[in-house]
Length: 483
Image (cartoon, rainbow, N blue to C red; front, side):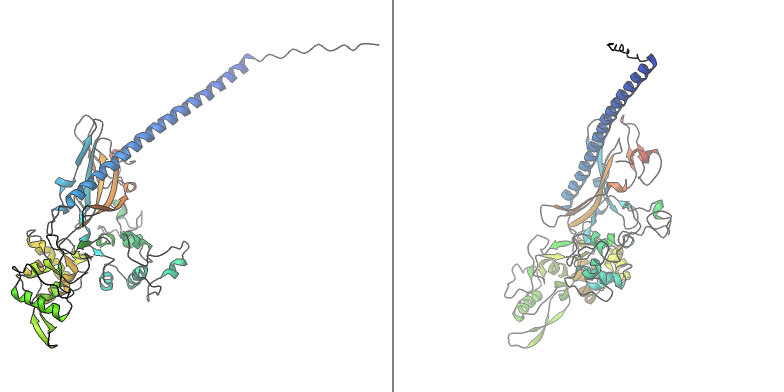
Protein backbone atom coordinates (compact mmCIF):
# COMPACT_ATOMS: atom_id res chain seq x y z
CA UNK A 1 0.00 0.00 0.00
CA UNK A 2 1.48 3.25 -1.09
CA UNK A 3 1.96 5.89 1.42
CA UNK A 4 0.82 9.29 0.37
CA UNK A 5 3.63 11.78 0.36
CA UNK A 6 2.76 15.22 1.72
CA UNK A 7 3.73 18.23 -0.37
CA UNK A 8 6.40 20.45 1.12
CA UNK A 9 5.00 23.79 2.50
CA UNK A 10 5.22 26.80 0.24
CA UNK A 11 7.42 29.56 1.48
CA UNK A 12 5.66 32.98 2.25
CA UNK A 13 6.21 35.60 -0.42
CA UNK A 14 8.33 38.54 0.69
CA UNK A 15 6.90 42.13 0.25
CA UNK A 16 8.62 44.29 -2.27
CA UNK A 17 10.57 47.36 -1.02
CA UNK A 18 8.19 49.76 -2.86
CA UNK A 19 5.12 48.49 -0.99
CA UNK A 20 6.86 48.96 2.39
CA UNK A 21 7.71 52.56 1.50
CA UNK A 22 4.09 53.35 0.63
CA UNK A 23 2.94 51.95 3.98
CA UNK A 24 5.46 54.01 5.87
CA UNK A 25 4.36 57.15 4.04
CA UNK A 26 0.71 56.48 4.89
CA UNK A 27 1.54 56.05 8.58
CA UNK A 28 3.59 59.25 8.58
CA UNK A 29 0.78 61.12 6.86
CA UNK A 30 -1.79 59.90 9.41
CA UNK A 31 0.45 60.86 12.30
CA UNK A 32 1.00 64.28 10.73
CA UNK A 33 -2.74 64.80 10.33
CA UNK A 34 -3.28 63.87 13.98
CA UNK A 35 -0.54 66.28 15.04
CA UNK A 36 -1.93 69.08 12.89
CA UNK A 37 -5.41 68.41 14.23
CA UNK A 38 -4.15 68.64 17.79
CA UNK A 39 -2.23 71.81 17.01
CA UNK A 40 -5.29 73.37 15.31
CA UNK A 41 -7.49 72.42 18.25
CA UNK A 42 -5.03 73.90 20.72
CA UNK A 43 -4.75 77.09 18.64
CA UNK A 44 -8.53 77.31 18.31
CA UNK A 45 -9.00 76.92 22.04
CA UNK A 46 -6.32 79.53 22.63
CA UNK A 47 -7.98 81.94 20.16
CA UNK A 48 -11.42 81.29 21.58
CA UNK A 49 -10.11 81.85 25.07
CA UNK A 50 -8.45 85.11 24.07
CA UNK A 51 -11.55 86.27 22.20
CA UNK A 52 -13.80 85.34 25.10
CA UNK A 53 -11.52 87.12 27.53
CA UNK A 54 -11.49 90.28 25.42
CA UNK A 55 -15.24 90.10 25.05
CA UNK A 56 -15.69 89.81 28.82
CA UNK A 57 -13.30 92.72 29.35
CA UNK A 58 -15.31 94.78 26.87
CA UNK A 59 -18.50 93.90 28.77
CA UNK A 60 -16.96 94.83 32.12
CA UNK A 61 -15.69 98.11 30.69
CA UNK A 62 -19.08 99.01 29.27
CA UNK A 63 -20.73 98.14 32.59
CA UNK A 64 -18.36 100.53 34.36
CA UNK A 65 -19.88 103.26 32.18
CA UNK A 66 -23.35 102.17 33.28
CA UNK A 67 -22.33 102.33 36.94
CA UNK A 68 -20.78 105.78 36.50
CA UNK A 69 -24.02 107.03 34.91
CA UNK A 70 -25.97 105.69 37.89
CA UNK A 71 -23.63 107.48 40.29
CA UNK A 72 -23.86 110.81 38.49
CA UNK A 73 -27.60 110.66 37.82
CA UNK A 74 -28.36 110.23 41.52
CA UNK A 75 -27.19 113.82 42.10
CA UNK A 76 -28.96 115.60 39.21
CA UNK A 77 -31.30 118.40 40.26
CA UNK A 78 -34.58 119.57 38.62
CA UNK A 79 -33.82 122.06 35.87
CA UNK A 80 -30.28 120.75 35.34
CA UNK A 81 -29.74 119.51 31.78
CA UNK A 82 -25.94 119.44 31.62
CA UNK A 83 -26.08 115.63 31.49
CA UNK A 84 -27.62 115.73 28.03
CA UNK A 85 -24.27 116.38 26.31
CA UNK A 86 -21.16 116.17 28.47
CA UNK A 87 -18.17 114.68 26.59
CA UNK A 88 -15.90 115.48 29.52
CA UNK A 89 -17.94 113.06 31.65
CA UNK A 90 -18.91 110.41 29.14
CA UNK A 91 -16.47 110.21 26.21
CA UNK A 92 -13.31 108.06 25.97
CA UNK A 93 -13.10 107.43 29.69
CA UNK A 94 -10.12 105.21 30.56
CA UNK A 95 -10.94 102.31 32.88
CA UNK A 96 -7.55 100.59 33.11
CA UNK A 97 -4.35 99.80 31.22
CA UNK A 98 -2.78 96.40 31.78
CA UNK A 99 0.28 97.16 29.66
CA UNK A 100 -0.97 95.23 26.66
CA UNK A 101 -4.38 96.84 26.31
CA UNK A 102 -6.05 100.05 27.40
CA UNK A 103 -9.79 99.66 28.05
CA UNK A 104 -12.08 102.66 27.64
CA UNK A 105 -15.80 103.39 27.55
CA UNK A 106 -17.92 106.01 25.81
CA UNK A 107 -21.54 106.70 26.70
CA UNK A 108 -23.82 108.17 24.04
CA UNK A 109 -27.44 108.88 23.10
CA UNK A 110 -29.41 110.07 20.11
CA UNK A 111 -29.22 113.76 19.30
CA UNK A 112 -32.72 115.00 18.38
CA UNK A 113 -31.08 117.19 15.73
CA UNK A 114 -29.36 114.16 14.18
CA UNK A 115 -26.38 111.95 14.99
CA UNK A 116 -25.21 111.29 18.54
CA UNK A 117 -24.33 113.22 21.66
CA UNK A 118 -22.20 112.07 24.57
CA UNK A 119 -24.79 112.10 27.32
CA UNK A 120 -28.01 110.62 28.66
CA UNK A 121 -31.59 110.67 27.40
CA UNK A 122 -34.20 111.04 30.12
CA UNK A 123 -37.32 108.94 29.95
CA UNK A 124 -39.24 111.97 31.24
CA UNK A 125 -38.79 113.55 27.82
CA UNK A 126 -40.99 110.83 26.29
CA UNK A 127 -44.62 109.75 26.29
CA UNK A 128 -45.27 107.01 28.83
CA UNK A 129 -47.49 104.43 27.13
CA UNK A 130 -48.77 103.15 30.46
CA UNK A 131 -50.05 106.58 31.51
CA UNK A 132 -50.98 108.28 28.22
CA UNK A 133 -54.55 109.09 27.29
CA UNK A 134 -56.07 107.75 24.10
CA UNK A 135 -55.92 111.25 22.64
CA UNK A 136 -52.19 111.52 23.32
CA UNK A 137 -51.44 108.13 21.76
CA UNK A 138 -53.51 108.94 18.66
CA UNK A 139 -51.44 112.11 18.09
CA UNK A 140 -48.17 110.21 17.73
CA UNK A 141 -46.58 110.59 14.26
CA UNK A 142 -48.05 108.18 11.73
CA UNK A 143 -50.59 106.70 14.13
CA UNK A 144 -53.63 105.39 12.30
CA UNK A 145 -56.87 104.45 14.02
CA UNK A 146 -56.07 100.79 13.42
CA UNK A 147 -52.77 101.14 15.31
CA UNK A 148 -54.32 103.06 18.19
CA UNK A 149 -57.16 100.57 18.57
CA UNK A 150 -54.82 97.58 18.34
CA UNK A 151 -52.56 99.01 21.04
CA UNK A 152 -55.43 99.82 23.38
CA UNK A 153 -56.86 96.31 22.93
CA UNK A 154 -53.40 94.83 23.61
CA UNK A 155 -53.13 96.51 27.03
CA UNK A 156 -56.72 96.68 28.28
CA UNK A 157 -58.10 93.96 30.56
CA UNK A 158 -61.16 92.99 28.52
CA UNK A 159 -61.57 90.76 25.45
CA UNK A 160 -63.85 93.10 23.49
CA UNK A 161 -62.06 94.40 20.36
CA UNK A 162 -62.41 98.01 19.30
CA UNK A 163 -63.75 98.75 15.79
CA UNK A 164 -60.26 98.55 14.23
CA UNK A 165 -58.50 96.73 17.06
CA UNK A 166 -57.52 93.14 17.87
CA UNK A 167 -57.97 91.11 21.03
CA UNK A 168 -56.68 87.67 22.05
CA UNK A 169 -58.83 85.88 19.47
CA UNK A 170 -56.83 87.49 16.64
CA UNK A 171 -53.46 86.48 18.15
CA UNK A 172 -54.69 82.92 18.76
CA UNK A 173 -55.27 82.54 15.03
CA UNK A 174 -51.69 83.46 14.08
CA UNK A 175 -49.35 80.72 12.76
CA UNK A 176 -47.41 81.13 16.02
CA UNK A 177 -49.98 82.32 18.58
CA UNK A 178 -49.01 84.11 21.79
CA UNK A 179 -50.64 85.73 24.79
CA UNK A 180 -51.10 89.49 24.78
CA UNK A 181 -50.30 91.73 27.74
CA UNK A 182 -53.84 92.68 28.85
CA UNK A 183 -52.06 95.10 31.16
CA UNK A 184 -49.22 97.64 31.28
CA UNK A 185 -46.27 97.15 28.95
CA UNK A 186 -42.96 96.23 30.58
CA UNK A 187 -40.81 97.51 27.67
CA UNK A 188 -41.46 99.70 24.66
CA UNK A 189 -40.16 96.90 22.43
CA UNK A 190 -43.32 94.95 23.28
CA UNK A 191 -45.00 97.14 20.70
CA UNK A 192 -43.53 94.77 18.11
CA UNK A 193 -46.02 92.18 19.36
CA UNK A 194 -49.00 94.43 18.65
CA UNK A 195 -50.78 93.98 15.34
CA UNK A 196 -49.61 96.54 12.80
CA UNK A 197 -46.56 97.69 14.78
CA UNK A 198 -43.91 96.49 12.36
CA UNK A 199 -40.17 97.15 12.78
CA UNK A 200 -40.55 99.99 10.28
CA UNK A 201 -43.17 101.62 12.54
CA UNK A 202 -41.37 101.05 15.85
CA UNK A 203 -37.68 101.11 14.90
CA UNK A 204 -37.79 103.18 11.71
CA UNK A 205 -34.78 103.13 9.37
CA UNK A 206 -32.07 102.97 12.03
CA UNK A 207 -31.40 99.24 11.63
CA UNK A 208 -28.12 99.17 13.58
CA UNK A 209 -29.36 101.54 16.33
CA UNK A 210 -26.39 103.94 15.97
CA UNK A 211 -28.60 107.05 15.60
CA UNK A 212 -26.90 107.93 12.32
CA UNK A 213 -27.95 107.65 8.67
CA UNK A 214 -25.81 104.91 7.13
CA UNK A 215 -25.63 104.23 3.36
CA UNK A 216 -27.85 101.12 3.56
CA UNK A 217 -30.45 103.20 5.42
CA UNK A 218 -30.73 105.71 2.59
CA UNK A 219 -30.88 103.59 -0.56
CA UNK A 220 -34.56 102.75 -0.89
CA UNK A 221 -35.18 99.01 -1.07
CA UNK A 222 -31.74 98.13 -2.44
CA UNK A 223 -30.50 96.85 0.94
CA UNK A 224 -32.07 96.23 4.33
CA UNK A 225 -33.75 98.01 5.96
CA UNK A 226 -36.39 99.45 3.63
CA UNK A 227 -36.15 103.25 3.60
CA UNK A 228 -37.42 106.25 1.65
CA UNK A 229 -33.97 107.44 0.45
CA UNK A 230 -34.77 111.03 1.42
CA UNK A 231 -31.43 111.80 3.05
CA UNK A 232 -32.91 111.88 6.56
CA UNK A 233 -33.00 109.21 9.23
CA UNK A 234 -36.54 108.21 10.21
CA UNK A 235 -36.15 106.82 13.75
CA UNK A 236 -39.66 105.39 14.18
CA UNK A 237 -41.72 105.66 17.36
CA UNK A 238 -39.13 104.20 19.75
CA UNK A 239 -37.35 107.48 20.66
CA UNK A 240 -40.67 109.12 21.59
CA UNK A 241 -41.95 106.44 23.97
CA UNK A 242 -41.23 104.99 27.39
CA UNK A 243 -42.76 102.83 30.11
CA UNK A 244 -40.39 103.91 32.89
CA UNK A 245 -41.05 107.59 33.74
CA UNK A 246 -42.20 108.16 37.31
CA UNK A 247 -41.41 110.47 40.21
CA UNK A 248 -42.13 110.47 43.96
CA UNK A 249 -45.00 112.72 45.02
CA UNK A 250 -42.67 114.79 47.20
CA UNK A 251 -41.45 118.38 47.26
CA UNK A 252 -37.94 119.44 46.38
CA UNK A 253 -36.70 118.68 49.92
CA UNK A 254 -38.03 115.11 49.77
CA UNK A 255 -41.03 115.64 52.06
CA UNK A 256 -44.40 114.15 51.14
CA UNK A 257 -46.61 116.80 49.59
CA UNK A 258 -49.72 118.08 51.34
CA UNK A 259 -52.80 116.49 49.76
CA UNK A 260 -55.37 119.23 49.22
CA UNK A 261 -58.13 116.62 49.25
CA UNK A 262 -57.33 115.21 52.70
CA UNK A 263 -60.23 116.18 54.98
CA UNK A 264 -59.47 117.81 58.32
CA UNK A 265 -55.73 118.03 57.55
CA UNK A 266 -54.25 121.20 59.00
CA UNK A 267 -51.60 123.24 57.22
CA UNK A 268 -48.30 123.72 59.02
CA UNK A 269 -45.40 126.02 58.18
CA UNK A 270 -47.59 128.61 56.48
CA UNK A 271 -45.31 131.62 56.93
CA UNK A 272 -44.27 131.79 53.27
CA UNK A 273 -47.75 131.04 51.86
CA UNK A 274 -50.23 133.75 50.81
CA UNK A 275 -52.85 134.26 53.56
CA UNK A 276 -55.65 134.03 51.00
CA UNK A 277 -54.37 130.59 49.95
CA UNK A 278 -54.18 129.39 53.56
CA UNK A 279 -57.78 130.48 54.09
CA UNK A 280 -58.85 128.77 50.86
CA UNK A 281 -57.25 125.44 51.89
CA UNK A 282 -59.08 125.59 55.21
CA UNK A 283 -62.44 126.12 53.52
CA UNK A 284 -61.65 123.51 50.89
CA UNK A 285 -61.21 120.81 53.52
CA UNK A 286 -64.48 121.70 55.21
CA UNK A 287 -66.40 121.69 51.91
CA UNK A 288 -65.05 118.28 50.83
CA UNK A 289 -64.57 119.57 47.30
CA UNK A 290 -61.88 117.90 45.16
CA UNK A 291 -58.86 119.48 43.49
CA UNK A 292 -57.25 117.19 40.93
CA UNK A 293 -54.05 119.22 40.61
CA UNK A 294 -52.76 122.38 42.33
CA UNK A 295 -52.24 123.96 38.90
CA UNK A 296 -56.03 124.33 38.73
CA UNK A 297 -55.80 126.99 41.45
CA UNK A 298 -53.80 129.55 39.48
CA UNK A 299 -55.71 132.86 39.46
CA UNK A 300 -58.91 130.91 40.08
CA UNK A 301 -62.07 131.35 42.10
CA UNK A 302 -63.63 128.10 43.27
CA UNK A 303 -67.22 127.53 44.33
CA UNK A 304 -67.25 125.88 47.76
CA UNK A 305 -70.10 124.82 50.04
CA UNK A 306 -69.92 126.57 53.39
CA UNK A 307 -70.87 125.24 56.82
CA UNK A 308 -74.37 126.68 56.31
CA UNK A 309 -74.82 124.59 53.17
CA UNK A 310 -74.67 127.59 50.88
CA UNK A 311 -72.36 127.81 47.87
CA UNK A 312 -69.99 130.71 47.69
CA UNK A 313 -67.11 131.76 45.47
CA UNK A 314 -63.74 131.63 47.22
CA UNK A 315 -60.55 132.99 45.60
CA UNK A 316 -57.60 130.58 45.78
CA UNK A 317 -55.02 133.27 46.41
CA UNK A 318 -52.52 131.62 44.00
CA UNK A 319 -50.84 134.06 41.65
CA UNK A 320 -47.71 134.19 39.54
CA UNK A 321 -45.50 134.96 42.55
CA UNK A 322 -46.62 131.96 44.64
CA UNK A 323 -47.28 129.47 41.84
CA UNK A 324 -43.93 127.63 41.99
CA UNK A 325 -44.17 127.23 45.77
CA UNK A 326 -47.73 125.87 45.65
CA UNK A 327 -46.91 123.43 42.85
CA UNK A 328 -43.91 122.12 44.77
CA UNK A 329 -45.54 121.73 48.17
CA UNK A 330 -49.10 120.59 47.34
CA UNK A 331 -50.78 117.79 45.41
CA UNK A 332 -54.25 116.61 44.49
CA UNK A 333 -53.26 112.93 44.43
CA UNK A 334 -53.07 110.41 47.23
CA UNK A 335 -50.62 108.28 45.23
CA UNK A 336 -47.06 107.93 46.49
CA UNK A 337 -45.69 108.53 43.00
CA UNK A 338 -46.77 110.29 39.83
CA UNK A 339 -46.40 108.29 36.62
CA UNK A 340 -45.83 109.52 33.10
CA UNK A 341 -45.41 113.28 33.45
CA UNK A 342 -43.43 114.86 30.60
CA UNK A 343 -40.36 116.98 31.36
CA UNK A 344 -41.02 120.42 29.91
CA UNK A 345 -37.27 121.18 30.02
CA UNK A 346 -36.09 118.21 27.95
CA UNK A 347 -38.93 116.88 25.78
CA UNK A 348 -38.66 117.59 22.04
CA UNK A 349 -41.42 119.45 20.26
CA UNK A 350 -42.75 116.18 18.83
CA UNK A 351 -43.50 114.97 22.38
CA UNK A 352 -44.61 118.27 23.91
CA UNK A 353 -47.33 118.67 21.30
CA UNK A 354 -48.86 115.37 22.41
CA UNK A 355 -49.96 117.14 25.61
CA UNK A 356 -53.56 118.40 25.46
CA UNK A 357 -53.42 122.17 25.06
CA UNK A 358 -49.92 122.31 23.51
CA UNK A 359 -49.83 122.86 19.76
CA UNK A 360 -46.76 122.94 17.53
CA UNK A 361 -46.35 126.71 17.89
CA UNK A 362 -46.33 126.59 21.70
CA UNK A 363 -44.01 123.57 21.69
CA UNK A 364 -41.48 125.48 19.58
CA UNK A 365 -41.81 128.54 21.83
CA UNK A 366 -41.07 126.39 24.89
CA UNK A 367 -37.95 124.97 23.22
CA UNK A 368 -36.75 128.44 22.30
CA UNK A 369 -37.41 129.98 25.73
CA UNK A 370 -35.85 127.21 27.83
CA UNK A 371 -32.46 127.46 26.11
CA UNK A 372 -31.64 130.75 27.80
CA UNK A 373 -33.15 130.11 31.25
CA UNK A 374 -30.86 129.26 34.17
CA UNK A 375 -31.40 125.87 35.81
CA UNK A 376 -32.91 127.38 38.97
CA UNK A 377 -35.57 129.20 36.96
CA UNK A 378 -36.42 125.97 35.11
CA UNK A 379 -36.77 123.95 38.32
CA UNK A 380 -40.58 124.41 38.38
CA UNK A 381 -43.18 123.98 35.66
CA UNK A 382 -44.38 127.43 36.73
CA UNK A 383 -41.75 129.02 34.49
CA UNK A 384 -43.83 128.65 31.33
CA UNK A 385 -46.43 130.96 32.92
CA UNK A 386 -43.96 133.22 34.72
CA UNK A 387 -42.13 133.77 31.42
CA UNK A 388 -45.47 134.63 29.78
CA UNK A 389 -45.49 131.72 27.34
CA UNK A 390 -49.05 130.81 28.36
CA UNK A 391 -51.89 132.57 30.14
CA UNK A 392 -53.40 131.23 33.36
CA UNK A 393 -56.27 129.35 31.73
CA UNK A 394 -53.97 127.47 29.37
CA UNK A 395 -51.48 126.76 32.13
CA UNK A 396 -54.23 125.17 34.21
CA UNK A 397 -54.95 122.83 31.29
CA UNK A 398 -51.44 121.65 30.45
CA UNK A 399 -49.50 121.78 33.76
CA UNK A 400 -50.97 118.53 35.21
CA UNK A 401 -49.21 116.62 32.39
CA UNK A 402 -45.80 118.25 32.95
CA UNK A 403 -42.83 118.04 35.30
CA UNK A 404 -39.25 119.29 35.54
CA UNK A 405 -37.87 116.10 37.07
CA UNK A 406 -35.91 113.43 35.25
CA UNK A 407 -35.26 110.31 37.30
CA UNK A 408 -34.96 107.58 34.66
CA UNK A 409 -32.39 107.64 31.88
CA UNK A 410 -31.70 105.59 28.75
CA UNK A 411 -28.34 105.49 27.00
CA UNK A 412 -25.91 103.30 25.07
CA UNK A 413 -22.34 102.64 26.12
CA UNK A 414 -19.47 101.07 24.20
CA UNK A 415 -16.56 99.46 26.05
CA UNK A 416 -13.52 98.96 23.83
CA UNK A 417 -9.84 98.18 23.71
CA UNK A 418 -7.97 101.23 22.43
CA UNK A 419 -5.29 99.04 20.85
CA UNK A 420 -7.07 95.87 19.73
CA UNK A 421 -10.40 97.42 18.75
CA UNK A 422 -12.37 94.71 20.55
CA UNK A 423 -15.66 96.11 21.80
CA UNK A 424 -19.04 95.48 23.43
CA UNK A 425 -22.08 97.76 23.09
CA UNK A 426 -24.83 97.87 25.72
CA UNK A 427 -28.14 99.72 25.95
CA UNK A 428 -29.35 100.52 29.46
CA UNK A 429 -32.13 102.23 31.41
CA UNK A 430 -31.42 103.33 34.96
CA UNK A 431 -33.83 104.54 37.64
CA UNK A 432 -32.75 106.94 40.41
CA UNK A 433 -36.24 107.82 41.68
CA UNK A 434 -35.41 106.29 45.05
CA UNK A 435 -32.01 105.21 46.40
CA UNK A 436 -30.17 103.13 45.60
CA UNK A 437 -30.08 103.66 41.84
CA UNK A 438 -31.36 100.66 39.89
CA UNK A 439 -30.63 99.15 36.50
CA UNK A 440 -34.07 98.37 35.07
CA UNK A 441 -33.21 97.45 31.46
CA UNK A 442 -30.06 96.06 29.85
CA UNK A 443 -29.57 94.84 26.29
CA UNK A 444 -26.45 93.75 24.37
CA UNK A 445 -26.25 95.50 20.97
CA UNK A 446 -22.77 94.29 20.03
CA UNK A 447 -24.07 92.17 17.15
CA UNK A 448 -25.21 95.37 15.41
CA UNK A 449 -21.63 96.56 15.08
CA UNK A 450 -19.58 99.49 16.27
CA UNK A 451 -21.89 102.52 16.41
CA UNK A 452 -19.30 105.15 15.42
CA UNK A 453 -15.57 105.38 14.64
CA UNK A 454 -13.17 105.16 17.55
CA UNK A 455 -9.49 106.03 17.71
CA UNK A 456 -7.10 103.10 17.98
CA UNK A 457 -3.60 103.70 19.30
CA UNK A 458 -0.55 101.60 18.62
CA UNK A 459 0.92 99.48 21.38
CA UNK A 460 4.00 101.73 21.43
CA UNK A 461 1.78 104.76 22.11
CA UNK A 462 2.26 106.29 18.66
CA UNK A 463 -0.37 108.35 16.87
CA UNK A 464 -3.84 106.76 16.89
CA UNK A 465 -5.68 105.57 13.82
CA UNK A 466 -9.42 105.79 13.16
CA UNK A 467 -11.46 102.62 13.29
CA UNK A 468 -14.68 102.88 11.35
CA UNK A 469 -18.10 101.56 12.21
CA UNK A 470 -18.83 97.97 11.26
CA UNK A 471 -21.13 99.12 8.46
CA UNK A 472 -18.16 100.78 6.75
CA UNK A 473 -15.33 99.32 4.71
CA UNK A 474 -11.55 99.27 4.79
CA UNK A 475 -8.90 97.63 6.91
CA UNK A 476 -9.69 99.56 10.08
CA UNK A 477 -13.31 98.42 10.03
CA UNK A 478 -12.20 94.87 9.28
CA UNK A 479 -9.80 94.95 12.19
CA UNK A 480 -12.59 95.40 14.70
CA UNK A 481 -15.47 93.92 12.77
CA UNK A 482 -15.51 90.68 14.76
CA UNK A 483 -15.77 91.51 18.46
